[in-house]
Structures are given as structure tokens and as C-alpha cells.
Length: 222
View 1 (cartoon, rainbow, N blue to C red):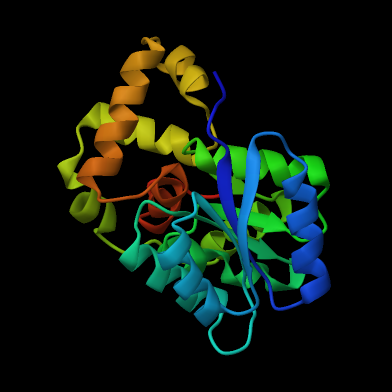
View 2: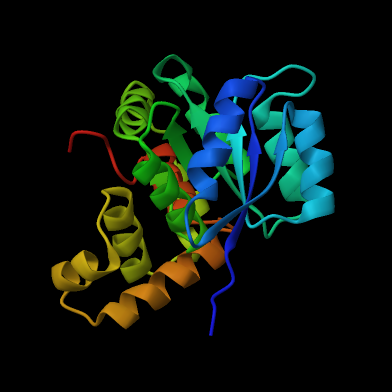
């Protein structure tokens, strides 16, 4: 029995790049390129019509940029997963993109293998952050003073164990690693993560990690 392929909408204002991404993804046996868009406005319309599983979204585009397009797409079709395309010089957009609901950032010079794996990871509910983007994100948070009282306010809905799990998620640990660290079953960790996302109204582990840094629960470098 054949498995349904992951349907991807490729969005980039540079035609050569857009078509290259489409070709690289199109040869994957489990991925189907549902369409291509050259700007954010076109991407919003096509996402509504095609209902892709994943949108590979450029950040800087004419008419409507990738951040605004991401917000509009997710407002209409929240089940769609958006993976942002970026260059190193555009890493400053990462925080706002995650806020907008993007599942992660991928560098435009990534290999075909990395591109396909990022789409698969995003589809499976995971988050993708290129190493340089992660460094920029942590550097950004390290320069911000933690808002006074924020952890007690935003995180007060969590149990003590859920707060521990959130801190470990923010440090990049997998469920299996957290289970070993806390000496509990991996399924227990999965349950905690699900409850954390639900209680804090977050989309995924990436947003959970960002919140942990924003509230001062986790401090970069410590």
C-alpha cells in the first residue's frame, strides 16, 4: 500500500532558486511539489486553494513578505506547516517568524538531502533550526534582561515537573534524553510536552523553547 506524499508549496521571488528547490524536492519519492509562488500574496492565495502540507517560504519578497504571508496562511489554514528559507544575513527575522508560527528556518544553501529532511521533520511535527540561526537566536536572548515576574506569570499554569521539562526542551534535549535525565518513561515526557504546548497555547517545541528564554526560565550559556 502506497503512502501519501508530502505536498509542498515552494515560495521564492527568485525564479531560479524556486525552480531549483522544486526540482530537488520533486525527485524525492515521498514528496510532491504542489505548486510554486513568486511572492507572499500569491503564496497566500495558492495555500488556500492547494492546502499543502508544508510551505517552503522565502523571507524577503515583493508585494507581501514571508512573515506577513505566514501569518495570513496560518490564520486561514492553521494545519499548514511553514518552513522559512533564509540566508545568514537574514537571521534577525527568526524570532518574529517563530512568533508568526513558522516551524523553523532553513538556509538557502542547504543540500538537497538537508532540504528534504527538513520538509519531513516539519511534516512530522518537529522543528528545524539551522545552526547559525540557533546561535543568532541565543545571542539575541542573551542580550535581553529577563522580564521581571514573567516566569511566575506566564508559566504559572504549569506543574513543577512541566516547568522542568520545558527547561530541558529549551536546552535542545529530545524526549528520550529528557526521560533519561528525569528518570521517567519517554511516554511520560511526551505527555508533559503535549500538556505544556496546550496550556501555553504554543504550536511546537520551537515556540516552547523561545518562551523559556523569553521568560528567563533558561538563560543562554548557563
